[in-house]
Length: 172
Image 1 (cartoon, rainbow, N blue to C red):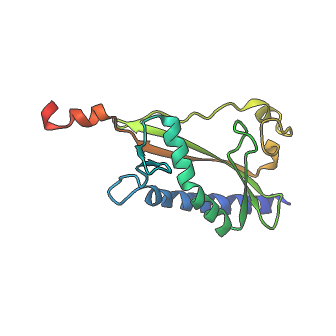
Image 2 (tube, rainbow, N blue to C red):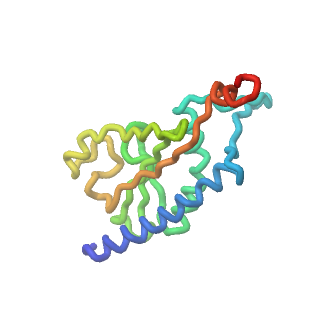
């Protein structure tokens, strides 16, 4: 594949990913900004609210948007390969359905904002694959086989119960 083809695939993928990202908020939240998922339900029909634990919230968001990611990949003629192990990079490998040399790495990252400030993303370790780009240790495919590397970041607003209580008349 020549440089012109690579650049075309890269430009097309980035454009599509950017467009897709703008649609995600409508999928995970209502028009007034409330989340569409409110908690968990077990087989006994007990309902549990979502805790403020960032790992739980991150996983819920990832699971919630995953069907949308699959539909997105299919709509642009890609298949998705999930990381074989939890600590491998990337979370998702997009592989073109007609040309398996065309691969894009997409990592899902979540963080929260509170009082107008974002806590930042944890990008994780770059391990050996970042330095030795033709190796496949802790990575789905060698780093240099990907045409591009992207991070799909989800930023949510976190409000603790103490924040909510301090804004009520009784506590002012």
